[in-house]
Structure formats: structure tokens, C-alpha cells
Length: 145
Image (cartoon, rainbow, N blue to C red):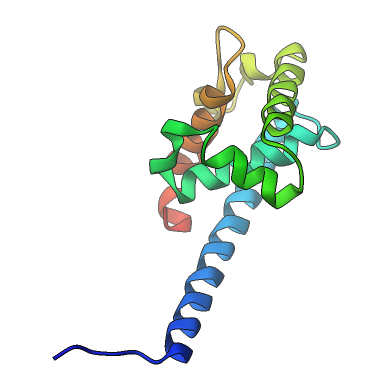
């Protein structure tokens, strides 16, 4: 016997999953924002919001990180109404700003940012992965990752 669901139930379930997904995304952004600021990534730089979105996408869909330019960047570009190359370039610019300000070389006295300390300027993927790992390690159980 096959169980059939009517369209209203399917739509209601999809909306419920979407609400949970967006609530978790907001929670990740809330936890991530102070670290971006503390590490010297200024909020007025366009790459700031793209980087934050990329970390959220990575945490919500970790299997897509292998092909970041084919999955995560296009989604961010569509969300923000820009191109994939502009997203990549803006994230690279935000990372360069943090590196030039000394933020990605480490913050003394904060053990949470030990994962965010780099010897060389990180790649986009390396930086996104480090932020995601730090959020998962510090807040993973608290926010349900």
C-alpha cells in the first residue's frame, strides 16, 4: 500500500523545513559576526556579507564544499544579484583586508580563534573552511550542527 500525501501537506512540510533552515542560518550568522569583526574584516566591504553567506552555506551543506565555485558561489551570487566572479573576488578582497590588518595572524588571549590563525594568507576555501570548523567546534552542540 502506497501512502499518498496531498499537495497542502507537502507544501506545509517544505515551509517548515525552510523555516528551520533559515533559523539555523541566522543563528550561525549571529555567532560568526563578532569573529569576522574581531579578525579585521570590515562590515562595509562587500566580501564581508559574501564570506558570511559562504560559511553558512558550507555549514548547512558541507558536501558542497568540494566544488565551491560550482555550488556555493553561484547560490550566493543569485541571492545577492551579482556574478560568481564578483563573489569570489569580493571574498578574496575581504580576506586580503583582514590579512593586511594582521587579524588572520591570530588574536592573543582568545582560544576560539586558534583555528583562524594562518601563517600565510589563506585561500578563499581555506578561510571559509576555518571559519566553519571554528563555529562547528565552539557552538556546534549549542546550535544543533
